[in-house]
Image 1 (cartoon, rainbow, N blue to C red):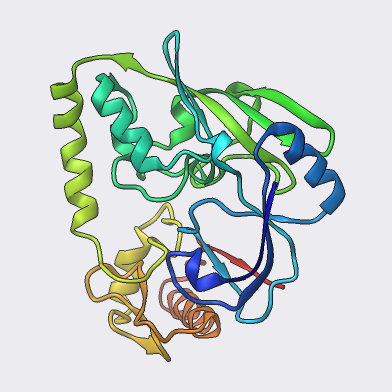
Image 2 (image 1 turned 90 degrees about the vertical axis):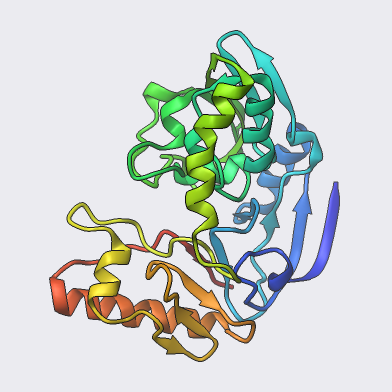
Length: 279
């Protein structure tokens, strides 16, 4: 197992801010992972870092990032088995090359498969958990299988405890053709390409039932509003962009300001989609 010390949070997150992570542990198999979880007790699981922002201080809380052995993609009857460390880009590309249809809506979504499962990433209409048949997870008691119908997942919530690590999952996919899947993927990729560029964590807030978060923030006149090096994107108001100088403190302050303004103007409480990890 590899242990990396004194890692700058800017190097492992898409928002490129935060302090120094004291230790990142990278187990290479399920046995190492279970032993590590027992030994550590408390920890944070890091995937691709696209939905995580670390505090500006030194992060003493141990961080687990799954090693390369958790990056498998294997065909199974009715779909695929994929490891949690597989990048979403690689997984969608694999499905396209193999002509497997069912997860085109995940095209352009960054991060790892495990991270996507944990937060049930996807579009407002469907999430990745909708096409999962079962999860393989690990905790301090060992490795076990969870059937999807036994998991209480919801919009932007995979229903998995923070003390449980997703190891792999089986996806329910249908055989089609490469060209058909490629054409079905295009609209999703085009939509992602139109999103704001720069250092960000994607959508900061979950969409309320009433109105998309970005529309509310725009109507509140907050596009372009800035706190230090963090600003609300002029292209999509549910994105906060780091101009390269933002601290996590800047981002937290801007999030609080946005939530307060939306509460005052519309009586709606926004909920963060991004996870901010303290010491």
